[in-house]
Image: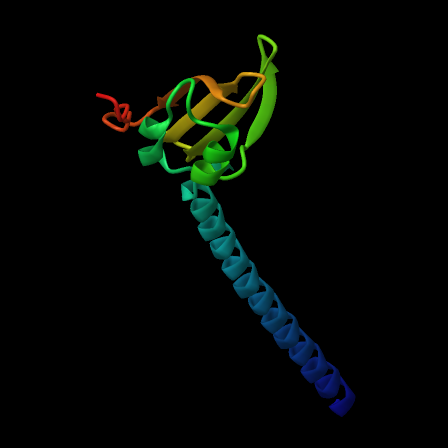
Length: 138
């Protein structure tokens, strides 16, 4: 009879231990799920950035036929992209920051240089209302 009681106690202890283990795993799983939900919410709220921001307030100081490549580098830093258009060297400064809802900021400055390294033309575009700088000459 004692052996049956001993076996019964052992079975009960194993069940209690199993239940405790299950409770612990459920608690850990709940915490893990909660942290995952928080992480996904934070990732969804954080913006995605592309390019490098540049000083918009200096765009108006660019003078066609006067400003040099060295002056552009001094004012804006290294270009984000370089290329060729119509046989002329181009530098592009761009910055784009959007969140997953589609809201954000986009701005770019593309400068064409003649063979002597003088600004031939430039274009500035932005998604921000009122951010377009006026040329210094106005």
